[in-house]
Image (cartoon, rainbow, N blue to C red; front, side):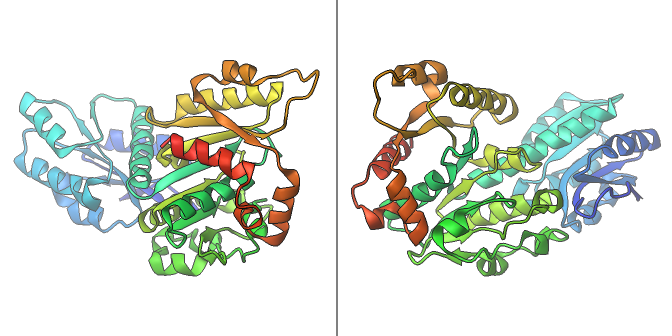
Length: 387
């Protein structure tokens, strides 16, 4: 087995290549050396001899396998591996020839991709990454209803909207215990401080072995607000993003999605290696901004980037936060917002600075201070009319 040396201690996601072709093995290994989050395990041989090695790799996230389409044993082994992990393991098949009957079988096996030799090793890498992203997004979306909040700029109130949305969803469903609020800004997240709970998520403890994260460990890392709302928040660390294993983050979200009915995520503005997977798996993405020229344009640009990089089914909405009553001479209007943001404009949320400040200081939702407040009314209109 050829193992490409690790470039960092957090590089634990495995892609396995099975091929009898030494030249292909070496070319793909060289291409994977440029991928800091993926480690290639290459085996020179036939698929029928490697089934147990594949099944025994707990960190495997994708399989690239060369088969002889005329060999029934190869096809039987391929079928077995395509059923690994409930059929969720991405499998990319490589062949020199392809017969019509074989193509039908590959479609039935639901392989992620097929590539014909001779091929470009970089295409193998791209195919693997696309298949991994798609598998993770599917895993996330099959569980809880997931809402992701991300700010188009700093100071636009993204965190308070994420917090209030979690409470609104939990209150409407009468399921506080089944609602989870997750702060993925490991560097400067504020959710634990807003709600006066202990930040128990120590993501570094599972960085080296994400498979350790199970329901029992998740319960240990959860905090509970006095309402019963579950909170996943880490102690702030200036070096957190540099040492965070992306596989651990996606594993955390997979587990949360499987164990809660609603998951609300407060995302950092800075793009991380795991951002695409999280956003692709969200049922709804809200981009938060303010009613300013730079704010509107930055939000639209961010949406255009998401449209290019996320799956076609990703649902994106803009929220303009901290809206105040229009004063004489104000430059921008609600019509301007609609023209710039288009059909993705979800709505306005009113500015109620004193109410928000008091709620944060007390560690309670706005509802506890004012059962009929404008922020909750605006957010409810956005959340529950867009479902």
